Image (cartoon, rainbow, N blue to C red):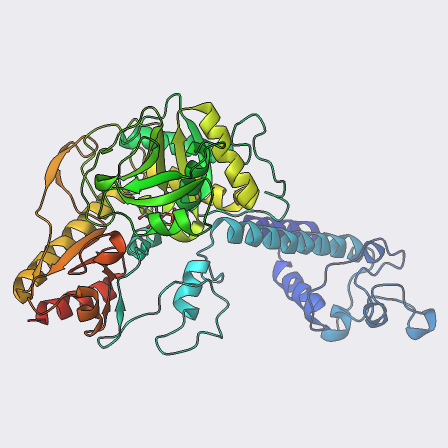
Length: 525
Ligand SMILES: Cc1ncc(COP(=O)(O)O)c(C=O)c1O
């Protein structure tokens, strides 16, 4: 705007004496609209020795190059403009300078406006004229019951629900957090130019050579902010989700020359993916050996999940580390929205994931904190042989998201506090669930437990990401089947090495699906 104003003032000053501004202004617009276009002058036109300035019709038609002489009977090239339209002739001699000034100033304005708009679009993706990915979601997201084929917008996961839809609470898909991230504006947004993140390598001086330094820093910063894990002296490793790092840990901890595969155990009920992930390639290095309670032997890898998926129990290793026994601590849910942070975890191998900490499961980023350098090197080797490296685009996005979370708590101006949002949301959902179970009368839930949270600096309840729901009705032996009959999908207890009267219910979905689930559950007798 300043450029336009300056341009106009300059144009008026340069081309008109006081008192003739209005007439000159009219002429100016006529000059540039006479052929229906707004065309900055070419260098040729500006330097025209013919005293004109604006290109003739023929010059326009000829791509700005000089027209053939005979084409203009008057021999002058610029009379097409204002003179023709208004019937007035310009005073000879003053014309070229004024027109040059007008052209130059308008060209500058047009260029400046284009530049300003470009910069505004890049730094304000919510500009009304620009559809951000988030807005595309609103505009283009497939409606329930449509194929969604028309949309080129990113996928949003499970389709929307109506009051008679099947409600899928089988997966721990953390879409509950969308509501928080929608409110954070550009705090967690990232633009990656086409030329960036092209190399395989990120930091060749690091054991984990494909890890982006900013991701490493933001991971350490967040753990220091929350106080949930010791990071000093640890190697941070990045993986394609913590699932990949779990496999990497099994590989790294299994002795290469062992005669027998190393036994992998976990206390039941255990996360249903532990046996699946351990055995799906039928490795000669390790194999699933079931519930840690019934394990007999010296060589093992114990998977310790705390808070535990599925039941939310706070766990320590049952068998412990030492000798040929090792432990991997899966702390995916050790964050303040789910549980009080009662101590700084400090284990040999600790696994975390974006999926449950910030809700960015689709970014597919997890990390490991590893004390021993050789174990860190072997885990890195696994990732290298498995997927070569880990998406740098995802790492940068994850770093941006983690930064936004820490910024919310570092005393700065950010109002957006993820863990406060998460705690409120989880507390509300658990209250609704307990009320629904009580109204129904046929379900039971784990007791409420709480503890002093060092992060929140107050006593806080355990509000786990999953409900471990038991159907108490005598005639129901398969709770998942019973709920499926009422259009609610949950995961059966038998997949966790437990009784099928139990189901695991995800507490992390969107509000609409959760509300319908609560109403249906309360109505079951
Ligand atoms: C206990 C536990 N560990 C690990 C994972 C996997 O996380 P990621 O999405 O990072 O692979 C999950 C996901 O549900 C989980 O519940």
